[in-house]
Image (tube, rainbow, N blue to C red; front, side, top):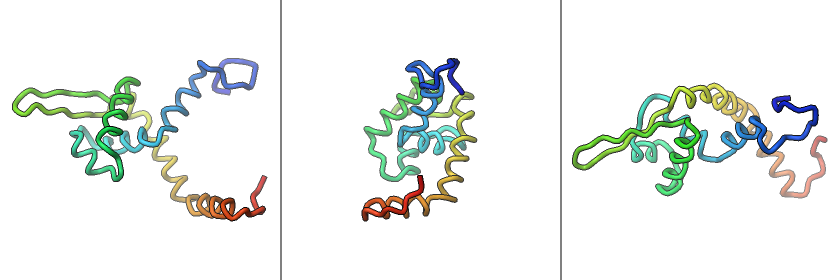
Length: 127
């Protein structure tokens, strides 16, 4: 068990819960993956990420910066510009994100079929 306890309950301060929370947010992994090839300006990120609003992108970047996964760099000049890049800690998540992506590619059709079955009230779900 990832949490140091003899009780199988995930404690509130369990580090595994922290990791699951980071990976569970819809946009965190997408933004981290979009930054894998180097620094990007917010407009560049939005261009690489379909369906994300400026507000949600800003919130996600701030959350990732708060957690030490992304660094923000401001440049002077007119107009001023900002870039975001992965930190060394943020780079450590690229392999797990890639593994989830491989899993999704291999099993996405099965998940969508299960969702369709469930929506139709199907009873063929495995236990």
